[in-house]
Figure (cartoon, rainbow, N blue to C red):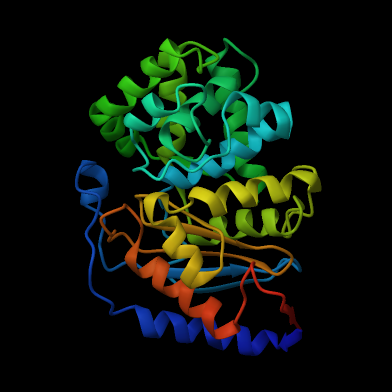
Length: 320
């Protein structure tokens, strides 16, 4: 069934969602990363980007925060662009682990591949795949260029966050070398780990995340720059990865209640994709026990339920 909503109605709904959620309590900043623990926990913003290029923003949508695990979506797209969908499936995989994002046990249980590029093990493996192999500087340029193309503008490295991450990434160091043990890392392990740590330390805004989300929803065409960033055939692949493991061990509950494929990060950001309709992002630092922003989840879910949009439903939404 086709439904129509006006642009003004959508703007009002985003404002309404912000008002409804801004005083929501619960969760806490990611205190195991000192930089993130110091971020103002009251920050909160929502951004919706449409295929037309129009962006609706409410709240702290220009605040630059740590992208963290949402960066995994970007690098997954990069290796899909460089290698194609089948190679990524063969070398990394597309299975949900059902375990925490930084699980070592998941590698031991599925040592034939790292499961998915959207958990830590698979993301480190993905960074090792980025071309050109063996050249850290050139790989980093490919990663940041890809981020810019998806978001429509440059992201900035947060040096203090990078230092904080590098000093506390003991678990990820173990992951990198365990992947090496199972021949599932494709460049020098320490290089891949450093690239992963740096990409997670990039600063991004909710507005930039919504543009990247809409680029996915729009079949790889950035709605703001009008650049075809990646082939449209890859859009369902990255959306399926997001849907499968975007909220880690809470992904099933999230999809069941929201119907929106979305990816979270411990910096407080969430990127959501509604194919053909819009990209949505929200940001608020306090996280639930699985590392997902409490307010960002609530805001996106509020909008999705009010619009009655669900990737598993048959309704079609048109925004005029």
